[in-house]
Image (cartoon, rainbow, N blue to C red; front, side, top):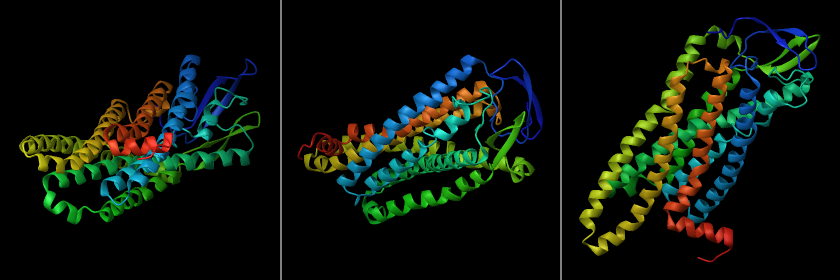
Length: 360
């Protein structure tokens, strides 16, 4: 296994001639230099990174924008709508991971002199500007990814309270509670996302015959506290944003489903009571579907993380897995709009009104 913080001297063929040049790499993080890949592997990575994931993300951003308009028109005076609105914002932030044009240029800039070397092969100012753009997009995506796992857990809690404590639910689970919960979720994960960006500063690295490239590297703070940072980011924060919410949502959804089935069966004979239950059932169905899509995709994402070693990003084959994991993420982030309009007839009517200018 390669050491992140060891100095490498790697011999590679240049693209403009057959000569070999030496590349000295210090403090490389997550394989900025993907020198060991085949052409077919690099082509597949390019298709995923530059075409499939960005296209799905752009479609998802458009769908999420429409979803936020629908929820706004439906009314943000309901706790459920506020929570779905906050989740849609977090989903949209996540997709900045996969529309990160600066990172695409890092790997697949067609104007690169050394095509087999990942890095911004421009002058220092341009490379630094691309680094700032890449860091901004990555920060937004990382922040959204953390919040994206917290809000579905809050939605599950809200539905558990609605189903199991109906008499006290409206007193405590209000629109204000939902708004504070969404804001608190964003604020809680903000410093963690900022710290992560501080661990990867810009560097301008010499590679051959006076040529230099811009990359992001690991900081001295990172290299001196590697064990602590891996413990925090790869275990504690990862469990807080993956297995803990997925487990809570899975158990909560099962409990809600059983309770709703029992309640509906008991009240089916009483027409008035059953009619009064329709709105609650519709809301529960929408929120549960949203949480189940989240739990399924994030469980798969988390399993893939633990199949591979912590420093798997140094290997090109697993770089492909990383992009496939992003594909799973963007499918989840893009799906909630379709869940909303499929499960909630009121939201579907509002959607038709917006798209087809119908009255309702």
